[in-house]
Image (cartoon, rainbow, N blue to C red; front, side):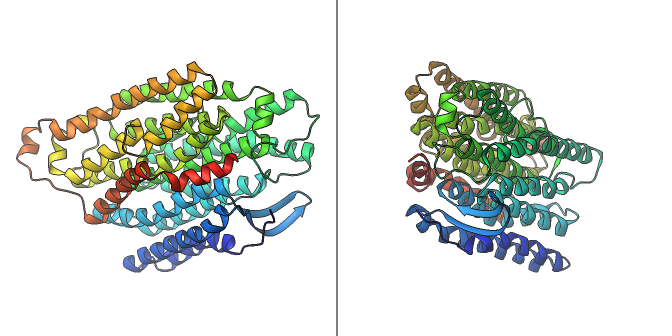
Amino acid sequence: MAAPQDIRLLFAILAPLLGAGLVMATGKRPNLREACSLVAAITLFGLTVSLIPDVLAGHKLRYTLFQLLPGLSFTLRADALSMIFAVAASLLWVLTVFYAAGYMRGLHEHEQTRFNTCFALALFGAIGCAFADNLLTLYLFYEIVSVCTYPLVAHHQDGESYEGARKYITYLTTTAKGLILPAMVLIYVLSGTLDFATNVHTGILPVGVHNGVITLLYICCILGFAKNGVMPLHNWLPSAMVAPTPVSALLHAVAVVKVGVFSTVRVMLYVFGVDTMDRLHLGLPTAYFVSITILVGSVIALSKDNLKARLAYSTVSQLSYIILGVALLTPTAIEGGLIHIAIHAFAKITLFFCAGAIYVATHKKNISEMSGLGRAMPWTFGAFALAALSMIGAPPVGGFISKLYLLVGALDAGSIGILLVLISSTILNAAYFVPVIYQGFFGIPSEVDAHHHQGEAPLAMVIPLCVTAAISVLIGFYPDFFMRFAQAVVQ
């Protein structure tokens, strides 16, 4: 179907960029500064939502800024896969603006203007990745996300934050330049284009390319997009936990890790294609490879007492569900993996919002210190419990839907091994989330805590975390919105 030039795509990526400029210009007036962030976020969300009817009607909307060579251009595209990521990211930015204001002001953080500017620039990169029409455009925006989130990781400007930021930028830029860039050059030489295929079956590599070369390119892409958190190139992710909690939420739910898995999935489906992956038997080996990350990440999460560290390793584990679903190459599994992009985003950002709210209200970071806090902070811990259920995959929240599709997809693929991985990881998920909930609601507070009045964090933080938790539940009851996009991808 013809792809009309749609300037809304350009406006969508410009909204956070202009928002960043306005934030810098109004930095000395905090209320106006946050208002500029909010307007930019709402504008981006509105533009993204306006694309939904056209995409669901089967149109692939494009906007070309310029062309360098035949098959090599800077072009934006909105399709079904784009919308899963773009809708979730743009909506969560709106909620995060409120949350970040409450967090940063509640702790009297320094350099709040720089923080909000880099936050907007990170969303500029993330939305650019979502709407990239080719591997070149995707790569450029992928690198923008890495550079713009570095100051956020190093926000506290102490030894620990600088070390975490150094590891963060080293892992992400080295893998991108050392693996993705040469793979991209070779793909262009072999195929004469970097434009993504129009469907998930064909890919863009021509018939006759040596199977070993295709396999090598495939491995470079899986490992090169290191934001996907796949082991052994995952260590940047826990190290980035030194950043403020809104940054952790951005890293682990919205921009950074979702850019990683989205880019990985986009290349798997639209550069290599399902048919090529099936012909070269790349699917199941990929699924088993990322299964190591799923299980090991969960085991490490069990050992962490620091709440943000436990959530970080949970993210490492959960991201690989998305890649696993696509790698199984069955329609049901691919759909389950794709909707997990959005489902994980809403649940994981809720968990990090809760961790930040607990810290602002009590200055506690460790799970062992949170006995009885659920009774003093029922909204926060209630939201945490709902989001944790989504991560576990228990009804009625959204995670149940994506895990159900993954389980059915594993059966369709005839892989009992992957089925056992999914069951085992679900048990591990429960093992590291249930104790936090139990400790909060049924644990006995210390004598100091028992005599110290504690309550919820500021409303600017509590309301967004309740909204994201509610959305996680709503997706469980009504998964059709994101499922329609996922089904359109595999058709």
